[in-house]
Amino acid sequence: MGVLIIKIIIVFNLLFVCLYFFLPKKRNKPVAGSFRSLEKYLDLLKKSDLSSPYVLIGVSGAEDFVQCVFEEEHFKLGYPVTTERQRSLVDKAKSLAKAEGLLLKEEQTADKEGYYLDIDLGTGDVHAALPKIESFYRSLFSISDDAVLEIDAQV
Image (cartoon, rainbow, N blue to C red):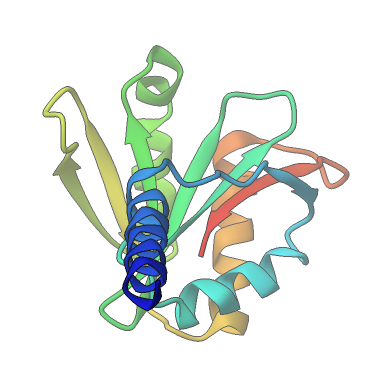
């Protein structure tokens, strides 16, 4: 009887491990916020131990977004260039980055279908990065002060 119980426990443990690692992870829904509310997400991003954490910053009702990551002790913005709208803003994005003194590189996407602008904000400090993100985002997408952001974080 004791051996049967041990076998049942082992089977349940194996089943739990399989379910945990092989079922798709639940994605968070984007939350409404403001640039001020980004602070907590940037702090979580900086402290994350996930393999590829990110924060997507969009505007409610629009297709425009940038991705923020924390790599090599700096916050970086990723601006994808795959749609016509995104392509139309590339020169503006490059000019804004240059005007702010930010390091900009063009990187190919993983699927080799397009590229993105990798913009190093030059800081790992949340409070120093936040105004740079807000300035870049507002200038690039010409959004109003009362625009509601959609924040999607995997941190």
